[in-house]
Image (cartoon, rainbow, N blue to C red; front, side):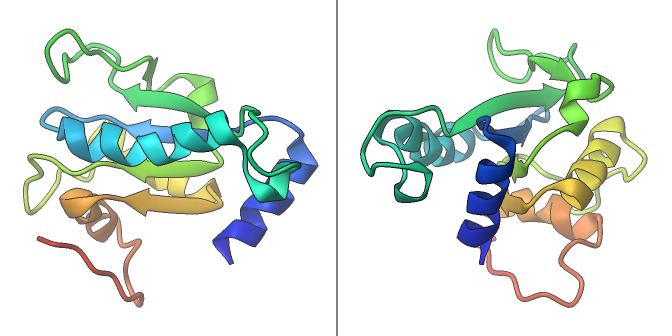
Length: 149
């Protein structure tokens, strides 16, 4: 189902699919970069639904979104602030795991951005306890979800 929706989005837009990556203080580097490596390999090898299988073509572009000021890891600051207009134009939302409190501050700008991005995204993904953000926002209500936390 998600693959069909992404194929349709790709065919309509004719541009790389924008993946909004929510970066928050305490995110786990491996949860973020390890999972994104799958999409990076799609860029390197191509996807069957975007043309010739294994033909390199940029399928995904990544928008790293945070508050634009807070260091997220040594020497890492997000590319875009949640207020940047392009940050609202994502096709997919990805939330890595990390040091996530049980109850997030729903009024935070990053959470408001996640909610808005999820509303318009074709696909919403999380790793590990990044699902806590989805739960806080009510995006898992009435859905089955599995996490290792």
